[in-house]
Amino acid sequence: MRHRWGSAARRLGAVGVAAALLFGCGFPRVAEPPAAPRVEGARFIEGPGGARLWVAVRSPRVEPWGVVYFVNGPEVGSDEPYPELTRALDASGVATVTLHVRGAGFSSGVRGDVEDYALVLEDLQRGLDHAWDAFPGKRIFLFGHSVGAAFALHVATHARTPIAGVVLVNPAYRLRYAEGMGPSFGDYVRFAFDTAFRWSCITVDMNSNPGATKDPSDRAEGLRMQRDPAVVRYFSMRAMFGERAVMGDCERNAAALEVPLLLVQGARDALVDPAGSDAILAAARVPDKTKLVAESGAHGASAVETETRALVAWLERHRAPAP
Image (cartoon, rainbow, N blue to C red; front, side, top):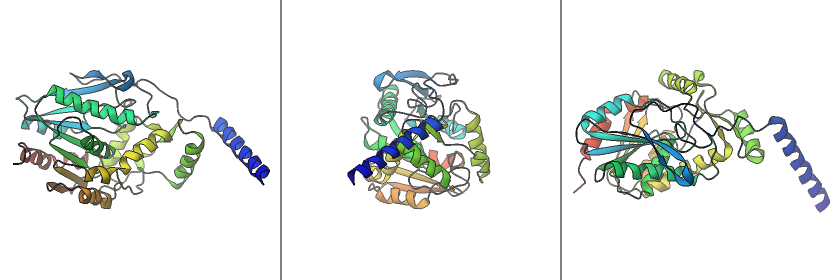
């Protein structure tokens, strides 16, 4: 019996090696961003292990009373994602800080793969530290969208500096299949193979068919992301599992929050299950928690840009610490 099982295991291993050789290791491993930064006033700071992390600091025309730190996911692009909100923040006296984690956007590192996902999370903490150093004593709000919302919850509960509140937009916690935005059954079969035999290979295309997305604003955004060389499109299963672990901690991190929370839900979001957003809100024990439904918002930037006034108004209401 042991002999037969050993032979079967060897055959399975041989099949795996042959398949890996047959299918190769997916998309090329690129260690540097394919596009040069275009944002004026941006700079690089050092991340763990010597990574060069791109960070942009934007100050309002007046002395800022607060700061919004945009906590980005790995698919961040080269352009300002929320120009309407950024202009409104500037007019309100709020500075903004944006950081690209290793292997994403304009930062260094292998694009779409990271050996230890804790390094990505530490990069985000370095961005928060930089925001505090740039604007000492100011009220800092974390702002996360989709996967960035899951990251923002993690940063908030592990912060080394004081934060004043957290804004989550369409947090990627519980997801639904959405045409043009989610994997098919065949993709899941391939993911299982890649997990077993090509763990660190760049094999997953996260934006393969945005033209099939039903919502016009999300469709246009997905097509822009495909054309943007700074956007990471291909990932390893190792990176996907690291990201998924952070997403899976959303409720636990929400329960550990000690600052006000605003959760924005796009009414037309086909990807995020609203039940997941409600679970995050319910898990948060802070008394100051609010849900805002963006009636004209889908999954992407439209959920932010169509609610600019409400977002700035919420920040203004938290301009001073609670008594």
